[in-house]
Amino acid sequence: MTLETKEALENLTSSFESFKTVNDQRLAELEEKGTADVLTDEKLDRMNRELDKLQQKMNRVYMASRRPSLSDGEASTDDREEKAAFYDGFIRKGQSQGLDVKALNSLSGEDGGYAVPQELDRELEKRLRLLSPIRADAKVMSIGTSRYKKLVNVGGIASGWVAETDARVETDTPKLAEIDPPLGELYANPAATQVMLDDAHFDVEQWLGEELAEEFAIQENAAFVSGNGINKPKGFLTYTTSADDDAVRSFGEIQAIATGVNGDWAASDPADILIDLIHSMKTGYRTGSRFYLNTGLLAEIRKFKDADGNYLWRPGLEGSASSSLLGYPVVEVADMPDRASGALSIAFANMHRAYTVTDRMGTKILRDPYSHKPYIHFYTTKRVGGAVTNDQAIKLLQFAA
Image 1 (tube, rainbow, N blue to C red):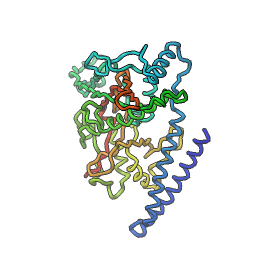
Image 2 (cartoon, rainbow, N blue to C red):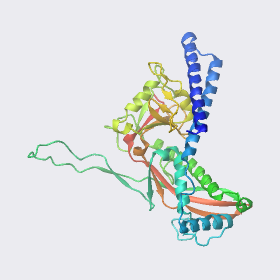
Image 3 (tube, one colour):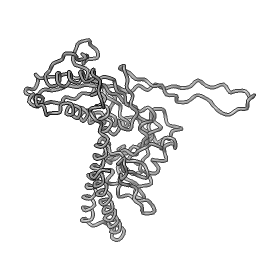
Image 4 (spheres, helix red, strand yellow):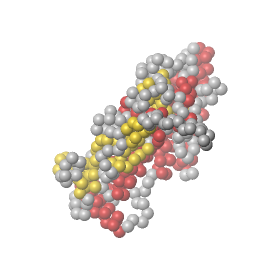
């Protein structure tokens, strides 16, 4: 454990202990006077924000230790030549000799860009997994065509036990459903000046990788959550929801558990609905499941206790740096909606089983030194799709009656 990690861990632990003390004081005031002191509430809000910062710092320290190196060991001569041609020739100077020409428009044969080196493609994928919380947990498929289809058996095959000489029951024809994750083109357009590119100390390789990964991660994560499926992935919050369980619900619908109050938690014990949410999922899917919610809602849940007075939320103090709720990891997703009437604000999901991300192999880049002088833009595109492929492995909490 590094000194920075140890310090972040100690600060997070100490801050959470102080948070619990102040929240216990707030609960005592509520019980005694029916209302909490304004100063206590304000202090608790400040401590909540501080906990967020400390948890995020802990996450950054952990992710920094996992951050992939741009140089994967000893590169071959061909790889070194490809990198030199791409970064030193094309990116810095606009020279395109030796680069793989690609059409930016998949519907035409016109040349419009260049394929990035395989090393940059791999680096983008690694960084996206670190920056995009949904991609990090979902099943990611690399595809070589414009479509990815998956057949799912939704019932119809009979099964059972028989003796060796017993007659076998004729099985029904299986019912199959086709899942076709919508695919769209994702683009980023980072810019640099020629002076920056001419500077020998400017790490153009790291700059380009970080800029592209950050922009791609912001756009794709929003689509994985709430994308409408038109030229972009279909987000898991945009599917039809139903209160029915897995045995009754139609294929393609996601079960939503209602809190019982429009826009709020149940007044009696708000923690109970979280337990109901967990147990609405089949046991086999619970292993590997996580809670997905935004920071504002997490701040509310931090104050919840169980019947024995234990806090439901626990800060991430282990190597994975993930906080937990009722024993399951918590993933903060900025694109999840705030608590509001009818809002689907919390997902409990085994995301690897529930959601599939499709990556069309090959990222393309176009160098544009003309449109916004003196800036040189690097218009970069990649095709990404996504859809729910198992509606039984994801449950949603809805703030509704």
